[in-house]
Length: 491
Ligand code: SAH
Ligand code: SF4
Ligand code: F3S
Image (cartoon, rainbow, N blue to C red):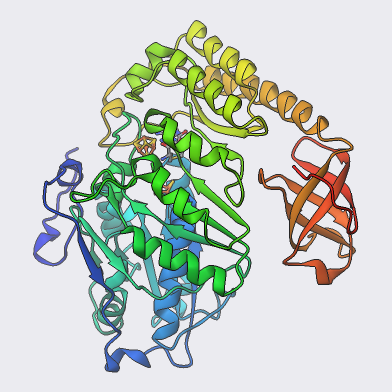
């Protein structure tokens, strides 16, 4: 049966994957967030909102921006969905199961919406950038009031106002957008650690990946805006920033009139008085020697590098369009390890990519053995509509994919355990983040390499950097004891 096709373009701005694929030459515009108009400032007085966030740190941070805007409109945050007047799903499209969860949630909330017709139910984030998703919501989830895309966040006041007063579903998703919007309000969820976008979008077009379509073209924030934000966070007492971009090594490539790249940015951030600076995610392809030199200077630049490899086989890497070979990846890892002997490497790996043979998968295992990552995010390949690989036969049986994932995880766990074991008896620097969820007598925090450490200690250490001796390493966490005042070289 042919699918029903509705021309909704006359009612809304809807997404288009083909358009999203295009990369336009137009210069990136840096716009200022328009102040929220007077008549929208108090729209949310006495009302509350709940944002459910899926996906990567980029999305978590977008949620902080949306929350910042809603706060300025008079709304307050709530955790209770029965109390909320606005519920937004900030969604992720990276794998099918991420999407399934959201559709499940939208279905689950239908009775609540029927009971409370004034409730505004909205969908934003990467799923809203997909035509098929928007169509499905229009047809199967008509109780949704609002859909907006990743390029439309600054438009939230207008969109929400429209949703409040309109009977139709409000949809605004721009497919092509090359702008950077500065000075959006942010309700940061953590008082110690902050996210800072340095660039948006991705132009890499790995054949399996939906992100270049959902996040648009690569565009960098101006150095002075990034540095200004980090300085302000330092002034406010934040202890750590994580610089965000889908491919941070491409930072600055789009600047026409200056040669200022990620290494330059890191070198400048190094001089800001904030104890820890992280970044994610770096693509192996553009990881240059200049960057390694700068990172090796250490200081507030922590020695943790998340370097997604995806596969250990050059043929698979080629089909993935990752633009590096196994050997090039290994050479890069060697260079990093030489320049930064304490570097902790973590990675992302996909198993069961179309056509992946047993031998090709074995190459992934051997690469993992050779590099010895401290940890890895491992995924079963999930075809995403609109990407090149979705047209190729997804020919690895699910059982085989599961088996490969299992073998890979077993191997990685044993390496993680061994790596953590090497820390037994060592003293590490820990940023104390709070009490352990399980035991209030125990504090928890992270090492420079982002490992979770639990140790007994007084509450007033929260927010401080302390030295902790590791007494009991485990696979995913470390137990330790406080080393008071002792001046020791901490890892
Ligand atoms: N920009 C980052 C990755 C962002 S997505 C980078 O290039 O490193 C996070 C991870 O999700 C990817 O590294 C990849 O391992 C995984 N991923 C992306 N698309 C996927 C798909 N279609 N199926 C399974 N895993 C996928
Ligand atoms: Fe996706 Fe590749 Fe871009 Fe990462 S670099 S976001 S995997 S297209
Ligand atoms: Fe998901 Fe979008 Fe991030 S697809 S991983 S939320 S960029």
